[in-house]
Image (cartoon, rainbow, N blue to C red; front, side, top):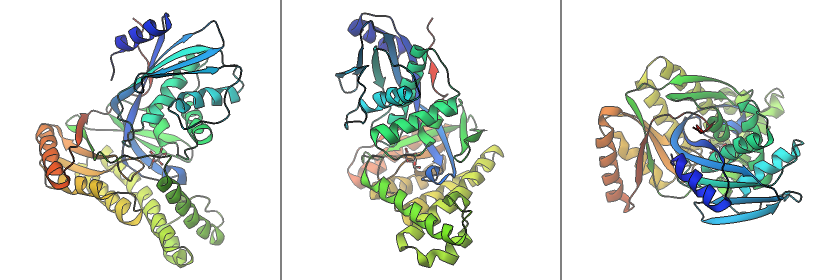
Length: 386
Ligand code: GLA
């Protein structure tokens, strides 16, 4: 996390004003991939990488947003908010402002400084962290406070409707609702959730393949369409099945021949992944780490073979982790086609695990990976003003 004092000083220097500070974390998903938009289950945890947003009111109607990461400022007129994003980094904070305006709030002028250490394009939800940090900042400015699940939903809408990325609810939800030391099992249908404690002797080792990932990209969209195609076939026979969350492996066996081969495979991934995710939460709560690891391995195979959401480098990273000391479970995390693997590793072995994985991956691919270690972090919050 970036030091709050640094962001405060940066904001003061640029905008000559005191500010309120808010922070929202990125995430890893331990298990439950591409199940959120099928109204299924996911089990993410927040990580220690986060976005900090500093905000102060202004006397004029200007919305000034400065990103330290892009070293760029953008200005908008609060009386003429844009309707759609423009493919620019400022779409994420502006999307939240526009969605809040759509809820009936009059958005005044404000200055916003955004600083993030969530690696961009790495499948760690850098976008959601910006949205949620901005949402907290705007709530403060406007003087209201929404329940966190509702706040997460509005941030998701900012991304769907303004940015134009058709993501599910997982990333915004975990950023807004995470609890330190815990994974969160979320039912994406009704947003009910429960926390599963991650034992203190387990570290989250995040291994970046350095292959860039994007939710706005074409692959995410095609996979989502295939998942919906699989569901539509089952709905024809069983109208009560509205999302793949409601379908069973038997349904797929029975009516799979009416789907394109790809839709059948994607469907098999989603339906089996929901089962694995709930089982993994139960196992984590019961302290059965062996089982959690086994389910993560199965989830990766399904993600890679049936969903075809992995890439060669991510498969290599997961494969190389298998023989290393302290590994509990490894899989590709997030939207896919690159990004990071999540490895649950016994704390005592974590330094050795990280060093060896780095060395082996470099030897095999010629790419130097970034490997980080994190505890499960808390959710978005106001930074202590004291
Ligand atoms: C991205 C999206 C999420 C989810 C994952 C895949 O992170 O933002 O909503 O669909 O991909 O599990």
